[in-house]
Length: 264
Image 1: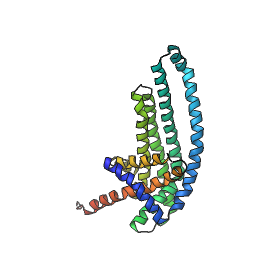
Image 2: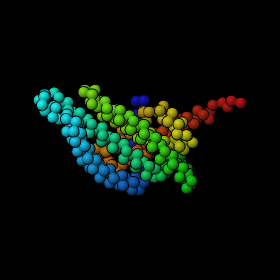
Image 3: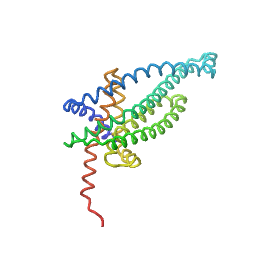
Image 4: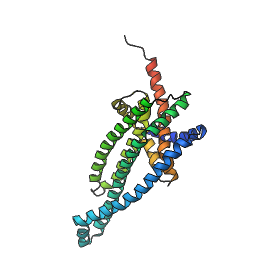
């Protein structure tokens, strides 16, 4: 899996060169600006409402008054750490929902960008098909709903674990790892669809290459540490990088299939 993670990370550098050489900036900048605007506004709103809710919950449950009555420094520290962890996990949960909403809205663009990337790499033209576009949108929406459901289950479970002292300190990393996997999964699935794989087959195939999904999602999230510029580049760079990373594996698998003797 580590090898696949490294391949996925290197694919982002290859994606940057590919985008620059092929002059694909309009497919990067336009959806990127929309994503950055929505992300920035919603992030500020969520941060404020999440902080208010956590403070309200602590007061209503009596946790703060109980810790203050005991006047115990260790308990105060644990309460502060617990509050921070819950805030971080809830932030990741929000990001997950926002991310899937944007994937649903942007599925036509991302699907086309992935196909265009592969077509350029293989030196072929892309025949436009409106029916194929509708099919890609439907698949993208269904997959986003499916992934968001399972990711929500995992994140809510992790949220419960975050209340356990010491053990709960690891939960943000667990939640982030799950976030990375499911986002990278969505990016890789565009290539799986062109291999005529059903969603169950795509799930099984990407499960065998978890590192590619995790690595793709890791860099996607790291780009968000670079305000505005990183937000603009992150979505489309993730699509191109995922297509580049899976392409040689697809070719190798296809070569094995083609060379296998037929069974009569």
